[in-house]
Amino acid sequence: AQKVTQAQTEISVVEKEDVTLDCVYETRDTTYYLFWYKQPPSGELVFLIRRNSFDEQNEISGRYSWNFQKSTSSFNFTITASQVVDSAVYFCALSEDPNTGNQFYFGTGTSLTVIP
Amino acid sequence: DAGITQSPRHKVTETGTPVTLRCHQTENHRYMYWYRQDPGHGLRLIHYSYGVKDTDKGEVSDGYSVSRSKTEDFLLTLESATSSQTSVYFCAISTKGRTQETQYFGPGTRLLVL
Image (cartoon, each protein chain N blue to C red):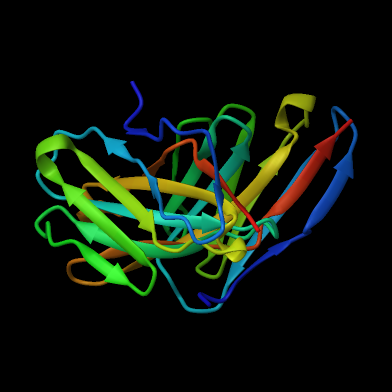
């Protein structure tokens, strides 16, 4: 079973529209971390945010915001007033058992295209 | 910038040829990882290391071996490359504070096995 599910494979929006990327995770651990990474067309993986399981506060960083809800095992990512530079593949990831530095589990990614 | 470099950045090889990819970090991180990225699969862990000479298998380790003789270098070897190993390979390091951990990635290596 997938530990991280990103059901949206591809999304297209027109510039300045808001867009939400969904991420649903599965874990039995009480301590875990959730992440979002961005992969622009140039190919590098850029870290965006980390959230630990004890902190359900939503976070806003400029046009980016994240909604963490343990009740639904979701960690959704919203881009407000999208721009062409937001076009990228976005990955959600889960890290369990942080004390051992064990592996991350990545979703399959959502490809976002922002049309000018 | 977590000081991670990968070499080579691009490689074309033939089936049956051994291939070694190198990941180098400059910040003395204990944990290092090798992933492969394929369409429809996201990133999948191949092997990881939690110290010099300490390595373990990930989800897709068959056909791959790793070595870590120095903290700064983590090598991924394809003993006999196959076309199914055509992929983009990413190295990552893990920064661990007391209560948090994040993985930062190298620039990737595009490998084509003909």
